[in-house]
Image (cartoon, rainbow over all chains, first blue to last red; front, side, top):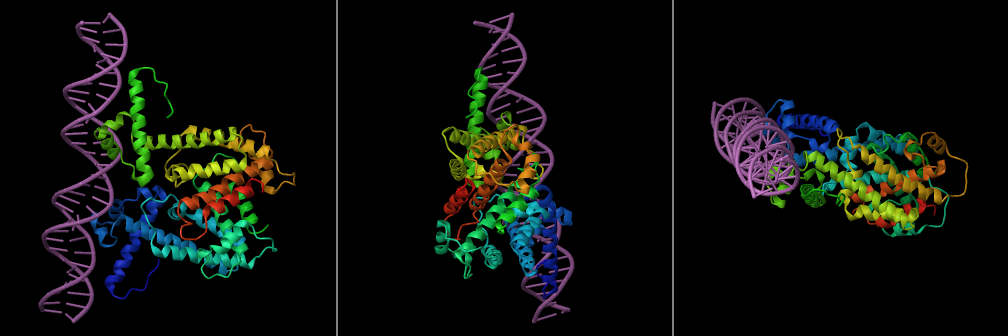
Length: 216
Length: 216
DNA sequence: CTCATGCGTTAGAACTTATAACGAACACGA
DNA sequence: TCGTGTTCGTTATAAGTTCTAACGCATGAG
């Protein structure tokens, strides 16, 4: 799924088993959530008993961390692929929703409830800025007519660490953030089930937000 | 915290112990998250051993369900109190943020990652419509100038189960939903730590969204 | 062919939730 | 005031979990 470049047969076998472990982990997470992930259950399903998994992952936390990393990568890849296919902000918005609906628990692994003690590994922030770079590209490409900068935009102009070296103007920074927060707002509420029984169609609400944020 | 109306001394003692259990549960959740909540640890802290807690809660799930119920109630109460104090949409928006920041894990208990199998108890939906009623009141009171209805608004006009018997016009329904989704968008990302290290001030972003959604 | 490294096993410690069975304390009716 | 039945807290136990330790076997490198 990620590293087919194996030199020795030992490493090749090792990578293969790691992938099988992660495959079963994803199945388990999809049906029962990340909190119910059990190393023992995975081991039994694979056919080896209990502590053997510790040869491949230092523990439950490292396995989950690896899954989080893969989830980030997955989102970044679909995002970038979609952008390279010529998609604009609207296309990215619907790619985000499709990615989330494809596996809600994967979405929650990245954007759901954080464990207070847990600190995300360094490279996830790198992947995040990769995603933001794609988003900023799209925002800078579809510039709305110039307007006097809002107080928020002047604030963002002075605090643009997250944008890295990207040459996007403050208005694009603001649009990228609005894109992110407004779409996640609809998405997280929908996936958490807070719209069930309300009657309306969440997809329509999402589409409306996507259009609004893509600059009608 | 909820039912001081105890007739017999037995029931009074029982309610008291239940509250103490919940108190320790909240402390534990605040520091380690809901997934790390341990009945055993609570029992030891209270001074009684293990299985005694099962006299008061049928199990871990029932305790957490009770905490979720209390969290809903807490939000509905602060929301309604704030509205009765004369707050408009902007006031409600900042009440929501204050409530969330006051105890992030309580926020996540309600709006965070759902467990796939879990079904919320019936009365939480009643509390939700209570919150929505307050929100719809505020939206209907601060009506923006009339405009041609968007496709989403006509859809909402025909699917307004969640609004109950509230006489809010479609434009108010749309505003209430935008209020909800846009503010939760900023809030959930902020509380989950996705803005840390980005440089800007989440409070400013939230305020900007609140102003936008309250009708600038 | 030798031998160190890696892999999978079982055993066990320290946890967890949850049930069962027992004894004691308590409130209430006679 | 005196039974008496309900309730409470206890210990014991079962069935899970993560994770470490120690032991053999197989594999691949030299």
